[in-house]
Picture 1 (cartoon, one colour):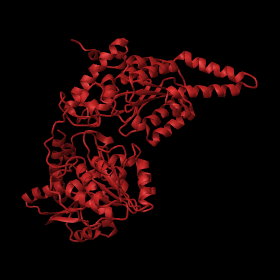
Picture 2 (picture 1 turned 180 degrees about the vertical axis):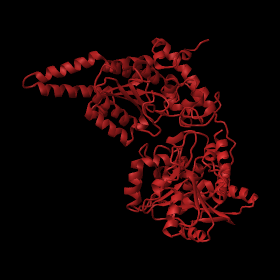
Picture 3 (picture 1 turned 60 degrees about the horizontal axis):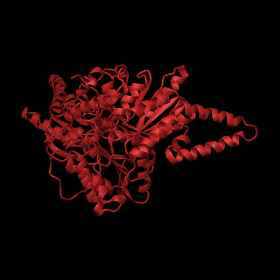
Picture 4 (picture 1 turned 60 degrees about the vertical axis):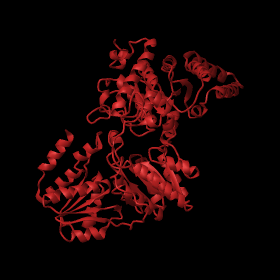
Length: 639
């Protein structure tokens, strides 16, 4: 039996369906999404919640002529399916497949690339402004979630939109508010009434008539306006948006396609900034995702029938878990410790800390800039705030790190989860820039553990220091080493000699240390004995050990999971140049000047020569000029 979805390849095909066919189409899209993501993994709950909303937007508006800008991208799976990527949807987030986020290079329907949150309003407003400057008449729509809306940039965009008064539509996808059927029905009716042409024509005509009455006209209009706002405030929670210059419409039920289509058809005829408040349910239509939307926000493959994640059978525990456990243990003995995160309590491993120390835990929402300065303020009074944020998201708070923390030399501890190559989420989520954007800031101490055991000692060390500290560690499980029962403070700025060998010195950082040790073993089998150093500290660098080894003349290779520009290797080269040790041969392994695409972590590391085989080949090239093995290795890694 032919599915409705089989007929749909573009939004133009969608418009050929009648209104009653859109609801069963939504169920077919959900079935495809659940079936696919159960095999590939991905961000499921948010996308399940906006299926009807996505259908209604493409059904009513003339995309891609009308510009549709999605926030974050977690909610765009139905959008991709309806805009020519249905057949390629099974490749989502896979190497060589379609992205899990909007990507301009992928489709003309993806008007703006979004992997970080809260950008849609500003980007879409820019498009609305150029539309007005060019004299064009198409609509521009930003879709933003309630969590993303709390970020400062979102309110900055709303503020300017209200000032510019351009034709501009913001869809607020609210999937957290609880709403009963009766209230929902009334709200939907009022929203469709308020968005209707008759109501708005009457409203504008009444305004004109009242203001023209001699003597008392303006006073009567103000009184009528206040009366209108009072009545609306009883039914409609939108006064804050009205004060920002938007016409507020909502809330409406986001799973009633007829209500959505009716409302969108009405607002197409309106002008000026509009905000449509839509209530949706995260995980809608798939019971496991409805029950646990946090788990199904982003997960790996799972059993479709039960929703249970499939075990990866990977040995060891994750760096994230070790961080959370260690911080909780330290907090039991040290009342100065405060934990903060920006909307990522579970993702950063702070669940246990939050349960055990609710008065010392703060989730500020998607507000990284505020989180850093808030932590800086707490550190003034002797507390030790520990801010856990993914490496790629900390980029959003760069000025706060420089100005509010490091300039004042405040003891704020930054825990950078997901540093380095992250995997299937692709270039928006790889944490490959943090060494470069942190190491040059005065007063900053920057560390990276070789394994999960060293991570706990680094966190303990950071708490003892009286300066800003950043610790970067990767996504995924550690090296499956035993954890020490007690913590010890590491000597500041001192590297660790792990293996001796005269032929060459491998200076490895963080999670590249164990691959470097394996590379040294492989080289030893070929009769090449190499020294291996665990750098531990990017800043302060162990200059004494570095210079003493460089003076011996053995070639040196640095290894890091960060961009080479301004990274750990750059720090080594700068040090050697400063000490006039430029005669030593040096090679730097890391990420070249490019954005890393999506793919499994092991495959990407092999491609960039950051696994044991790649390091071995790089050492041989440094020693003998041999590069054929490295080239073959990279070719094999890419398949």
